Length: 105
Image (cartoon, rainbow, N blue to C red; front, side):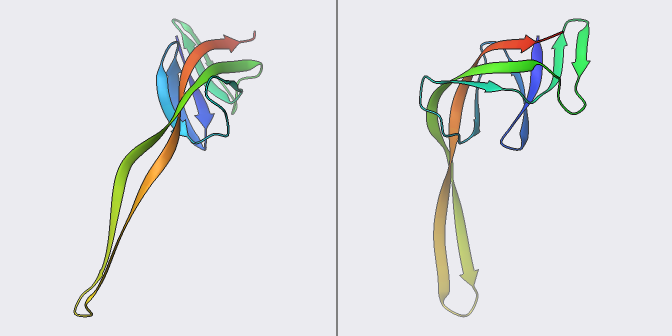
């Protein structure tokens, strides 16, 4: 059993008990969040596809932590000008754990 949800403008395939990182949310650790933008639900032979979302469907997740991604280095270099600038960036993510998938009939 799995579902496809939309979070932060991206689509994520989620299963029960799965832990994944999504774009940063304004939720505290330990809080629950319900994603109501369920696009696809598959349970064996039962497949439901939303137009664009399935009505009365929710994926409930628990916010586990806030984590940082890998460091990305950016180097701007102008040849023959003796000019170089090195900067970096680390994206912040919210780590969530999927607790339940509810699809109303």
